[in-house]
Image 1: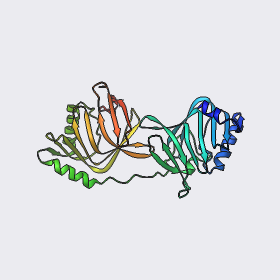
Image 2: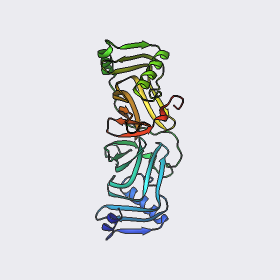
Image 3: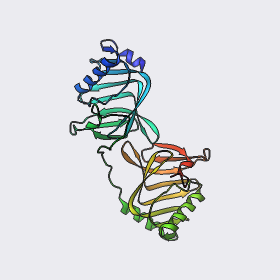
Image 4: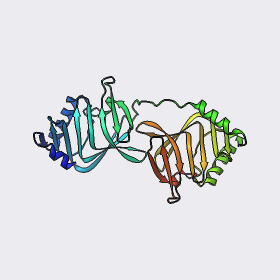
Length: 306
């Protein structure tokens, strides 16, 4: 990044010192039509902007700053050097900015306000994930290391539960099926234990039906509630379980999962696989439909820890 900065230094406006750098940053964000609180860096040592190339940079004294925008409860990390190419309503080819998703820090590569939705700021990560938030969440005075109420978010489309019900029916013949919360929970935990997965991995409530077809490897759970959102406290990860949860099971793995989502970048992403690898028997890996995956200590999903 330092090399990139040097290549744009000639002809650039450069100032040094936290007060003037903060002022110039806010003025530039305002000029291009972005919220003035979007870059809350600390102890800024240098601000630079090359109007001819559209390149801007900030150098802060700290190695990095992790900042939480309180209205949306979103944590963003700013490195010692932050750079971007700027244009009206947009920062692009950003470096040095990351957002925390699925316990991973994902690089933010673009931030923009679309002409069609001037009240929304959209963040795009290097993985292709993007989401939009109320621009007011990034106004000066509305960002903090504290958490308050969540801002409005773009909601993903609902899953078609009818298709899952049809899938269950296609595996019902020859399956072991039980009804009632207590016996369903018992069977669910026994199956997870048999597979070598943590018994607290599926903490659903008011389970009305459990089914497992040993021949096809297909299992399902149907709960009375529309959905249950559950936070695994050791890893502070929220997972949503739909009315119907299904999966194909094998030793150490649930695959082709339906009805389970994890919350990332204010979006609910479908979890498609959960497994324990032979090489890391103490870790449970979650894989989402976007290709994102991460591993957690298996103890986080033990009964009594959820």
